[in-house]
Length: 522
Image (cartoon, rainbow, N blue to C red; front, side):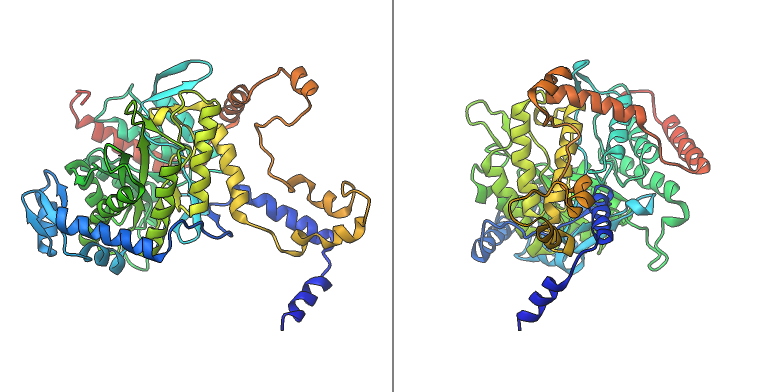
């Protein structure tokens, strides 16, 4: 029974044309809208362990409960659905949240981009890389560390657009402190719309700002905003909704979550946890709490609008028990990530976690080690949406220009890893082995000539030359080469086309809305 397929494989001969076609296919991975993984998931717990942690999460929801603060509407929604509401403390009957999520939340969904070729599928065996998020500071070799400005925000949108290894424009890539707090969300969302045609994230700092994002998205997409098959809005925005751990949801995040859910836009429902302060010091305790908090938020989204896309998020790092400072790239958060990814698959929703996290203040060896120790588990575990893929420094306080392109390079390597082993005729390379035979080399054979351009991942930053050549070219380190690269990318950036009428409508909306606010910077 097994002989015929083996014989078929042996009988096939890749032609030179086939090899060149395969090489072109290999090249195309750099511009795919998202990654489709071809390697297995890495699991650290069996079924019994996962079931135990699910049981513990339900116990938290049933016995301890979750606080929903300063939001009477949410408390009424949960009470009407059958939860036990005592003041702001909500306790859920065992299994209630899980049932609400599994009954209507999609297992995967498309986040549409204004350029349909860049739309992403979130869930299943896909991985989507997005930049880091939320930093008030930026760092470069030229200026050191300073507060971020809107020009930095635009620069990072352009760099994300230029990066073939990143699939998503992200959200609050950095916090532009030169703009008023009550108005800056307009400029940030508009920057994603204007300077990129990749998918983007929306504002969540007030429900009204989420509503502005929805309206600007409706203007941007125009006739393409509604799905003709359902009459509902397409999912065009993905936004980050953080729990106020431990076991608390606040009115700001709840307002944004409900606004997006009602508009059929997707939310990343993510407990932000520094273990030891915001959760127990153990992996199992942190996992159970994370799952409970996320289940409560996702269940609310389904009560507001059954079928609204949600992503189970986990951001769990550890604290130094000596200083109280957050640490990154350590083994315990990686274990949390692996377990949460498996629990998300069991629940049947997409999963967000990971990135290129580090505590280092500059793009040095510590930054590289810690980022690699986060990004590798991210990819092996099967994270679907990877926020903080590029640029993260100083525990998220700083967005680094050099770090951004260094991380984007590493993300490119993950494309190749997740593609797995090529078992096509070209991948088997039997024609090359026959041609070369014993005792010779493969440098000049037809297969190598057809594939050499893309045989291996080529880093735009790593220096693999001889010492003499490296020294003659300036003896630069990785950060210096990254400084040259990001400047080159910005110099060569070309904006994607945007309909002038749409651009004018967006600017008009922003102008009218900004005029309605007081000049206060709050």
